[in-house]
Image (cartoon, rainbow, N blue to C red; front, side, top):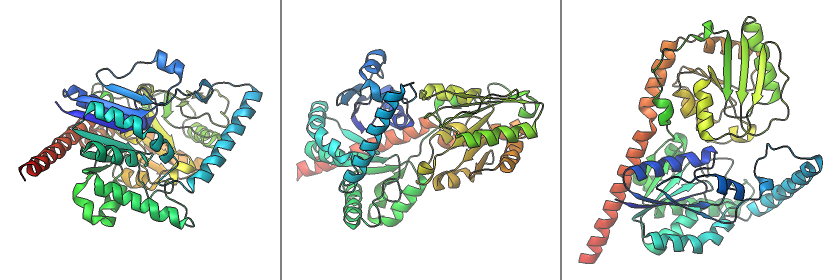
Length: 433
């Protein structure tokens, strides 16, 4: 039995994808008999805290005050006065964050990490972990992890769920020379201090091995994985060819903007005038939703939990994803693609990141589009709906065998045992000396 401490920005039951990676690790470690403690920021409102349930068998410690109910669900209807007030506060926060960001290394969350240092250290001392895992973003959490690890003299693993200095979302502006310099120094210190560094994004892993070869021996690639609930369903029932279905259900785990919805509906109607189209999507509220027609319906589901999103994925015929420009400009790899590609459904991914594009090249049941026209959508829908079920099953089976989450958790657990073993050997060697 190992004592494992995890530092993360968020954790179950947070419904966002940011919480899934470390939550699955904690569940696996718990099932192996380890004592797992998770420290994260407080991301729930008081009402959510009272109605929700924590992960059984995991010691979860949230630091900070509960969020205000006003900041809870951004899809809840508000009065016009409240809406104006919220927009004004949001604009003020955005401006303040932009100003503070220029002097914050590596990011604005560093000030929160500094405030939480004493409380987190108290938790770490009481837990007395054998190893600590620190997962970013925000990347400043590695500052907190490094300080804790040094104080209690414990090995730690730095996990990068997103790229760091190569990603436009996290790098300093080209004119802010001082921040770029100190951020690069901070990144180097993480690789120097951590016992192991894991990367969720292949392009990040390859780049860092080239840029910091002196630490290449401690770098590992650990992508996101396929949920067990999707992997277990593959092949249980023979899929019906989509071309034979009278209605096609499309699901997107991200917001689809009105123009794309209109183009999608038009492309489908021109291709299959005898079929009906149902589009279900979730995420942040779009600027508008087209009205239903005799042949097409649109349902916005709001922000839903991971389990609900998995259920929608399994129920869909075609899986759709449309990244906003801000995310597409980054180097991240969309975590939902792992669920999509394992589900034996055709996948249409619009406005991908560079990592998405490179990743999807090897999977023929996925199509990539950039700001697609009706004509491009028609061509892509035709390929998707005409795809043979045998092709979809074979490709999904191959994908699951390469990216099954359970296998990845086993690998991480083995790395943890190796790090603890090396640490014990060093301590014993010091003692004999």
